[in-house]
Image 1 (cartoon, helix red, strand yellow):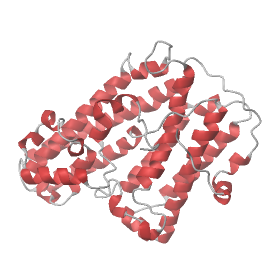
Image 2 (tube, rainbow, N blue to C red):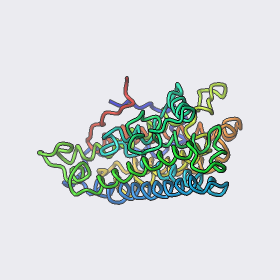
Image 3 (cartoon, rainbow, N blue to C red):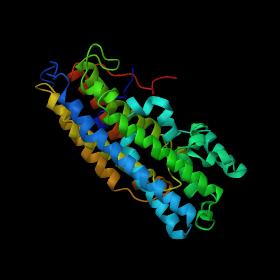
Image 4 (tube, rainbow, N blue to C red):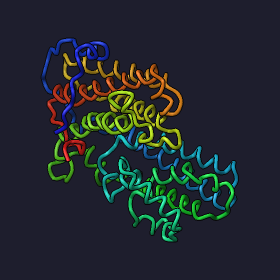
Length: 366
């Protein structure tokens, strides 16, 4: 089971003031069968997020094709701009770590990370040196190591050492490899969207739980999964995405370990990801299921999203510069405090108020 750290008393007072209000009722929420909030989550956030990701992937694949045929500084800049766009789209997809993305190693194939030992980077660099021809076709690339075929690999192709040659060499191996990666990402994005929109399968069962279904036998299981997306997702945001570069003290910071730091997308990813959680929460209307007397939980969540988002919006610059600037670094520390508080709000407070059990998280143990 996921464990959640309680905030120190002072931080809790500052960040989650609303949570000090008394809980007047512990009665279970009245849920529909299936809960309308699950349908809201799928139709108003998850499917649109996958549509945006698919559109961004298709645009990037098209631009990479053009870059390889007619290389120029302008075409390279466009490819980099399209990469920035797909990272913003990915920020919402990464919240939904259930269902279709867990099949066929899709999550790892889209993003092999964290990579603390640099295994993926070494594999990508080796391909660029050896110029393995099987890396130039999406079909054969898809059979290679997951570390060589996703967003992290493509970032190095477009922004890593030697990337400037993409603007100079026609049909270069590096560009062909990047083209294959983008085509692979595009194919996976299509498959994800198709499965989330399918009339049968995971998404349909989540919205229509039934004792005979494989994934969701009742509304409680469906609702537990939804709430756990917030609790587990916020824990990942804190203990993986932020902890990768943010140390307990400035001396322990590791800016070079930050996700997408080569393309200067670390802050953008954090901002978009946090905003995605807030948007997901609002459109699902999860708060409507809280029993009488538990409205303080919604107030606390709204408080956290508002102030955490405001702190992130006041940050600017590459992640290394942010960490080196004490006022900006202190804002990041505040954001981590808020994220942990929100994790408690979903994983403990809301879960308890709705009479649910937390779903297992891959962040628990080994």
